Length: 159
Image (cartoon, rainbow, N blue to C red; front, side):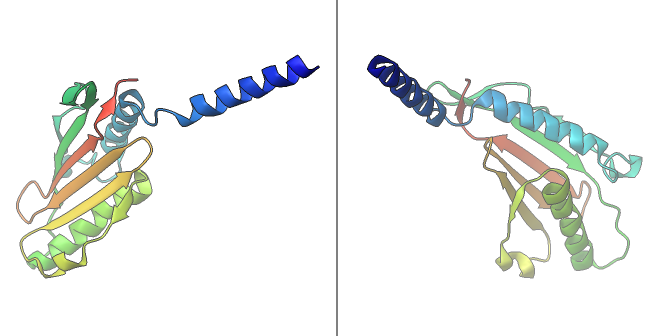
């Protein structure tokens, strides 16, 4: 009976230690990044021809970033049709639309920089998925393409 308890205790300790260990992997993060790309391609606004969604770099290559670690990068551009001549209003609207897409549709947690409210020529949007470790940054500009998105995984081990 005592041997059984000791065996169970060692199994439980081993299970807990193995579950706490390594954290996110490049495989998990790149799979999520691929899903995000597919979601962007099916987004009701971005799939319309006038948005001119263009995939500049697909997240299909391992890019070395540290000893034994890699990351994946997704680069996308898209246009947001300008409805009025006011640049500030256009940038504000384009920023809100992209923030909505990232937070509601793609489940990124947005960070806000209130200092950019005075910027007349651009907006910067940043979001994060802590699990599996992806950061997205979007530059919103008045000229075409309006949105310039870069999403990167953290520098992660392959497995």
